Image (cartoon, rainbow, N blue to C red; front, side, top):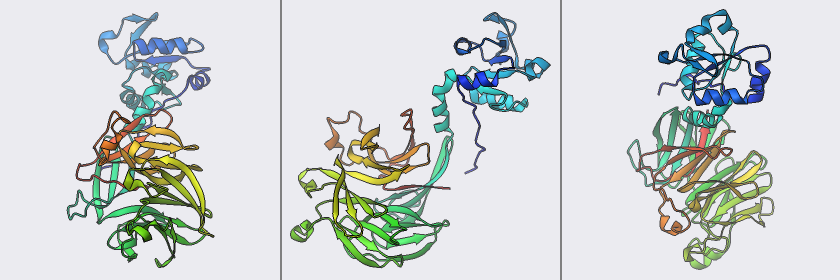
Length: 410
């Protein structure tokens, strides 16, 4: 995919305009309601000219000023003005002003009236590369099936390719490389060129799901969903210990807690699971994020409860986050819901501005009837702005129905 240069759209505030225009006359580029609203909010009315690209308007009068064409900006008066763009075609006008030699923010900006469109523009012009995993059935096809995928987003285009085929779940960084888990080959490390550096089988019946690494303890922690336990693995990929959730599996012969993902913070291990009591098979989804002391392997207690099929416990900007998957919720800040989505949410990362949230086909949508009035069956990645609550959806082919982890890469 050819990567385009990132556009600079100079959105700003009224306060910044007032500072910038102390000794400069103002030119409004674009005629109509937006220009009139912009003129009303300016602290000091120093509007010197009105411009528009529509030649049929040239020579007419609006707000007591003659409407002129952009050629005005080549005059001495025009060159020394500060330009405020008052049209929704701000991207095109910005490009036009750049070609005339004006500098974004220094010589021109977009009207604060259009700030609501700022997030839309930012979402629509994202340029990101990321990896995501899928635990779907393994396929030899390049475009679907379980494994690890690379997704590159360049504005309004995005392409994906499968770099590993398998049943892959957890995915983390490890130095310059990456670590993931697969039901067949176990735990494995691969480099930025997607070459497997090393791998090691895990005990039979593990069904490795989430994974995290502790630099302090120099150990990996791998959630074994079918073991009702967390494997503790050394730097050589050797299993050295495990933490059991309960003894229910030993009695029943089946896993009872449906453990999913984990997070290590200092001496604490946080684990997400469908049921604290082990009763999810009886439709009791008392999901939690449970904290363990790594040194003693003792349960400290649930730190987040009342969850319904939780996944992807993460520490982002110092705050624990969790996806309450069946209800399509992103929770943080003392378990407050900061985003809701019409799908089964699983897979989470953050770039400092936006959240990137995986959306899987909802196989359990009937459980949500009466709770949600819009249940999506599409798979893809949601780009979500927590401030404005605006989002964008990057849809993937239906055959990639399961997403588990998302990891942004440079």
